[in-house]
Length: 361
Image 1 (cartoon, rainbow, N blue to C red):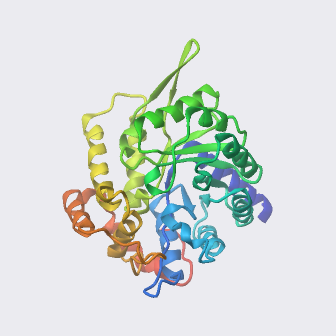
Image 2: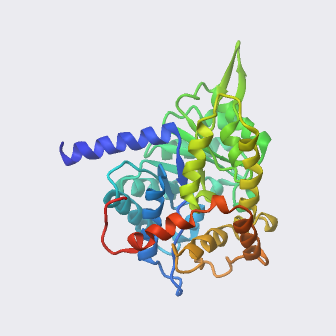
Image 3: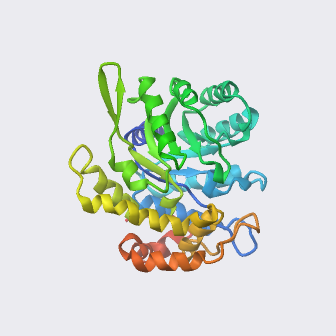
């Protein structure tokens, strides 16, 4: 097979992963103690996610720090992940690029992502706050002309804003929309999005991903049953595109596989109970009690303890762990030891940090 043919086959397989649903960690940014990009650890993170079994990577998103744009790092960081995924493994990896800003910026980012081999763009419309939904929809259509789009319902606490059912109904009709990440942290608005997709007859084209860090397990377990005319359409959330899954990813992959085994069947109480445990862990790592101000440093704290990053520094010096957050992470580490993947990381860390690629074990 030619290189072009192999690339096309790999891309087709990546789109199939996105349609089927997968663990897609939001890729953090690794900085050294001088707040400069740490190439060695940045590459190691990508290798970790691939070997952990993640179906894809989301790069240039909130967990990667939006400030990479002002720092001139957007293209470089996306390129590192794409090149590492290509050289580290022979299996397909779905690459999702974060897209932000007004139309000129978002289209330029989409073009960059497509040139680097990304398969879809996670479209953040936070820059359109206080603008009409008609204008936002036109913006989405323009970006979707460039790259397949994943919609993003982002909660206000981290810079987003809520959009109406009517918006999501019209958004679901855009032909090149392939998925929606639902992260309103609001059950009513989550159901609005599912209902909009069903009402648009788009449930077979648009894959639903959870971004609701406060409801991960139940989002993945529960059927959404939406009446449409004379039928009831049952829809499932098929995967997660989550900052929470940037840590302990090996266990997240095992969790999704376990939950999929019981979809469309009676769910054991023990699985239902996992929701409260995962929510408790996320509350510590994501700093829920301080309005998520320490969510990115919280992820970096866990990765730093494992040796996957060299520091917990962010581009913004003000972005640090909240008071008591490290103690909370200590608590959930002790309470839920079966959810961390420290042993997996310890067994592979030296290989991931090596300068030259090695075959995936």
